[in-house]
Length: 307
Image 1 (tube, helix red, strand yellow):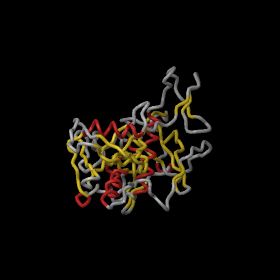
Image 2 (image 1 turned 90 degrees about the horizontal axis):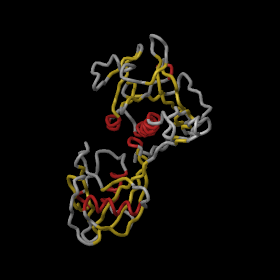
Image 3 (image 1 turned 30 degrees about the horizontal axis):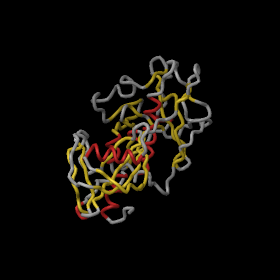
Image 4 (image 1 turned 120 degrees about the vertical axis):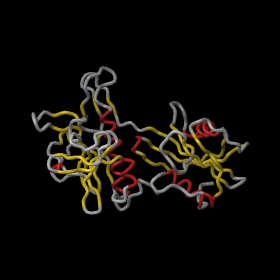
């Protein structure tokens, strides 16, 4: 899965005393795009010295003992004032403003790639993509944490932990993590797994039933509700499998297997365009090995699912 990056390792504990050095890598996001440099047959992050106008460099994590940072603002070349990144900053010279592929910044040309494209780019290793998803998760949180939700005062970063603090009312805000379940529904009598495809998402490959956990809901109740809502099926014998951080959408995914109980007849609610029962030898999986969903499908295919 995406987090299986051994022998590489990431330490995401916040360290307030870290100061960005000229050769430290810097993440620069705009919406769902990440700035990268093409080097030989690979892609890499720019460093601080390659982004001289980058300001407000916030420490994110260490990756193999090397510190990584997020550029949260840039200074204009004309008046040196510091502003948040926007359309008229580093992307101003892009050939295609709506969908920029290359960006000129100073004397360097960078690639601007969507996170979904980076996932499938052969020049990017899995451990690099995993670090990018963590950075993207934090970038979105910082972008959404400018003002206090209680009194509207501008927030400041805490000097001890990763939290945004209101200097007026002292409210504290931590990175948002949204729990969700991935569900492998098994028909034990016919030795089949329920495979789905979404109706309104740009995902063209097989998936499993999935959904977010509601307030006041246990994970087991989440499993029962999502399966019932999306397919009309009832389930029993719910057992935990594994979890996975999925920073692209700020999720923590938790995988469960369960057994269908009663009728096997499927009734779709509109969120799915397809849900079918497949035998083990009919399961193809997804194009890559990054997702918990794919691992759960392959685990069932190979007869290794928890009973």
